[in-house]
Image (cartoon, rainbow, N blue to C red; front, side, top):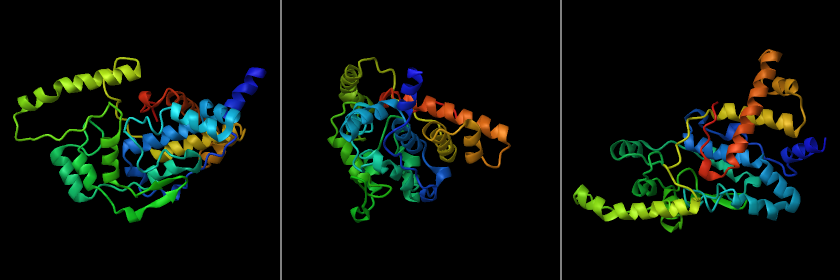
Length: 285
């Protein structure tokens, strides 16, 4: 009985997890895979026993300490957090990840097609393209303790890579008129040394960069999170949960879907708590 009470306490936070207003997510179907995965990473951590237990023991200071220990925001492999998305999850700053998303303008998409990806999809990021995707800083809005500069403050993001002390990322300015052999000779040894530094920090051999996440349907996962919260945090039965989240589905099917949803979120939480090094999630939808 004591074990069950402890398990329940691990699942029920004393802080409120702010729900995201789905109406504020402008383009749910076209969100980039890594944006959805980053959002779900934070939502999973907020429901995990590490943050919940830390907050019970030491309130906000202990929560913040554990937040950093989990790998966010300062140790995030994408570098720093110039837009403040990871700065104050209890005040929902990460909601801006999906609320502020806008597709790249046509001229930027054309440049991506020619020169590769602007995003971190193949281990390469073109800083010049990223910096060009900048909106004026007077678009800044304040959320929680962080400032957000719209969907694409590329200049700030690019600068964060240059300023970051994370050895995982190497920023280069390459003269493309040089021969490929000459270029490779100059930085092959440097790349190997940086890789050794990353492996030393990780305490293990780095076989490859973190895999890119498979595309997840945000609406589906918001339903999963709602099922989890109703069942574990609000104490509803799976039948009650299914009826609330899937009202148009027959009761037995709704109950089964709620059970599946809760199981998926449990797996998501376990993987997120392994740390950012073990993310993105490969849990099926």
